[in-house]
Amino acid sequence: MADANAAVAVVTVSLVLLGLLSGLSISWALLPVAVVVLIFVLASGLKGRDELAHLNVCVLVLGDIGRSPRIQYHALSLSRHGYNVTLIGFLGTKPHQDIIEDDRIDILPISELKGLTVGPRIFRYASKVIFQSFQLFYVLMKIEDQGYILMQNPPGLPAIAVTWVASRLRGNQFIIDWHNYGYTIMALTHGENHFIVKLAKWYEKLFGRFSDHNLCVTNAMREDLRKNWNIEATTLYDKPPPIFRETPLKLQHELFIRMGSTYLPFRPSLDVTKEYMELTAFTEHNTQTGAVTRSAGRPALLISSTSWTEDEDFSVLLQALEEYEKFVEAGHKLPSLVCVITGKGPQKEYYKKLIDSKEFHHIKICTPWLEAEDYPVLLGSADLGVCLHKSSSGLDLPMKVVDMFGCCLPVCAIHFQCLHELVKHEENGLIFKDSKELSEQLKLLFSDFPGDQGKLGIFRKNLRESGQQRWDENWDHNVLPLIKEHSSEAQFDGGH
Image 1 (cartoon, rainbow, N blue to C red):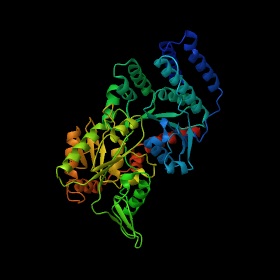
Image 2: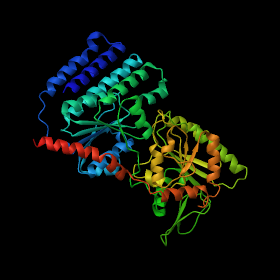
Image 3: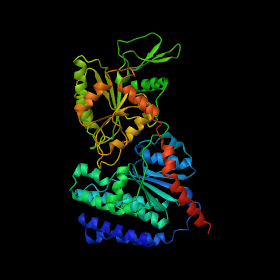
Image 4: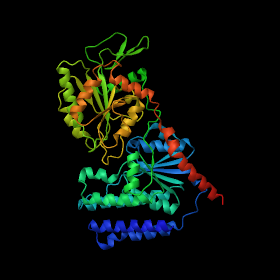
């Protein structure tokens, strides 16, 4: 309990300092002290721990559950092994249907609080952090006894500190799953030397050490956590679940029909009509025999997925497509392209306007948002993936590429520090540094299209033969032993 008291003291002092820095009066800044005293009074009256608490796991993300696939995979893996899961986060986007239908997983939505709307920016930000702290703490103290709280970071402010305090007061094991460093994402907007970024780094580095166990997404991050943060972590690479696989042609056609009802690039040319045939831009369905075939002279399907944030510069792809258009106009034997860019995010409208300003004759672009069940079907139907993710820390890997590889889809990915842990240049894809390199790679890979004897076909063959590890096997090897070990200890202690 001494550790918990020390942690609570640090949290309280931090909130007081944050309040003073935000311009609050002394009386208002000292409000957290009164709140913490009240919390201890309430906590002292908590009932004893449930002897079956070790079978309950809280999985937490201070973000949109539907846009947090790794957190959803954690929940499904825990459920598969008989654990009861309370999944906490914002309920903005619909989670995967498997999550919704799982009887062992209860979704507990929390509100995305905005804070005050008046006053200096730092005051508004501080109020948001304080409001979120109180809400999250209340929720974590209210739920039934848990053996573990597994939390995604980022976002970690204020989740790391609040979750640590709640876990100490309630006797949970606290696990942080490090996807990236939150302060490096903030630095993309504010710059590395901004006061709020430095404060976020101090907070993340200090409170990150309070966890009982840590997971991370790359060996490079594991080494950085050990060397610079004094945190020991287990590398749990993102791996595709079974839903990511090559899509049978019949399912491709059905998806293209649905997509064509909303998006023009999926529809067949107006001058193409065939009797007894249901057509899309890519496929033909014989309504008499039921046979589905690929359309002769079909365009190549290029796909990219994004959160439309500062760490992905889609002007690189647009410039590469302009160069590709010039190659086609110059007489190179290349297919037309349909480029699909999926996802939601803050910069989507900006890039949509940029896309609309382009005048392509051989390239069509659409920017849909797909349901969780349709996204893997589209990836499994595509000819090439493009990834423009540049890690803000240089230490995380793009999950979109993991999903693409699960569908045996070759990838062109922009270079950053630890990308080699995932993309093997000239083996399962190509790595580029700028739009010029990407345009040359597109020309090279599609020069044999739709044949499978060129590099594109070789990369796909390599992916098929690679025997990729899937999420379940990876999770069972790296996380399940950790959970089982402490579940057994809790069960033994509960029996005495």
